Length: 187
Image 1 (cartoon, rainbow, N blue to C red):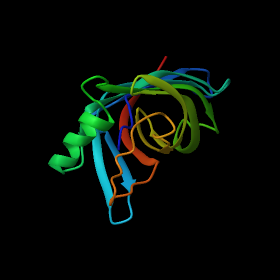
Image 2: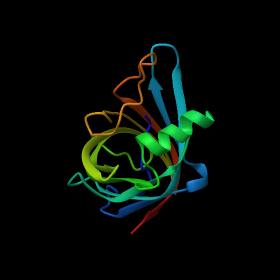
Image 3: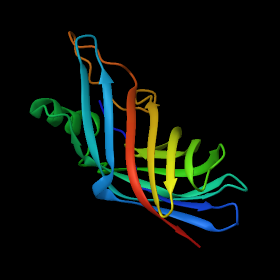
Image 4: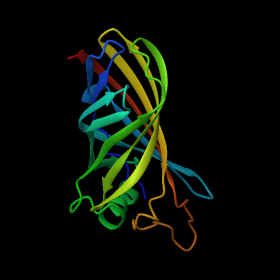
C-alpha cells in the first residue's frame, strides 16, 4: 500500500564560493506524507523520519548522504488497514526502514532564497534498491533551509504487493510528499 519514503537527510552543498554546505534535517520538523488513490476514496498516511543528511556540490551536480524513513511508523488512521499495510504490504517487521541515497542533482541551487531541483538517487525499500527522482523546492535563508520533496512511487513495479481487493481497487502508484526543515553548515 504505502511503503514509501525513507527520508532522512543531511544535505552537503557547495556555495558559489566553493564552500561545502551540509543540511541536517530536523526529525521533529519533518513530515513525510503519502497518498494512495482508490475508486471510492483516497487514503492519506504518514511516516516518521529517523534521520537525514544530504551533500551536494553545485559545480559538479554530485550529491551524497541519506534520508532514512521509519517504515514501521506508517500510519493511515485505520487500525485494520494499518495492520494489513504493515503485515502484508510493507512487511515492516522484516523491512523497518527505507533509505533514499541521493547521487546527483539537476538545477541551479541558490545559496539564499528559492531553488527548484531534481534529486536523482537510489531508494531502498522492501529489501531492494530502485532509481528514484524527487522534485525539490528548497528555500534557504542563512543557516536555515526548508525543503519540499515530491515524487510518485511505482510500488507494484518494485515488487510490493498491491492491497486491492475484489471490491476495492487502489492505484499502482503512491504519491510521496516530504516537508523538511534543517540547519545549514558550511565547510
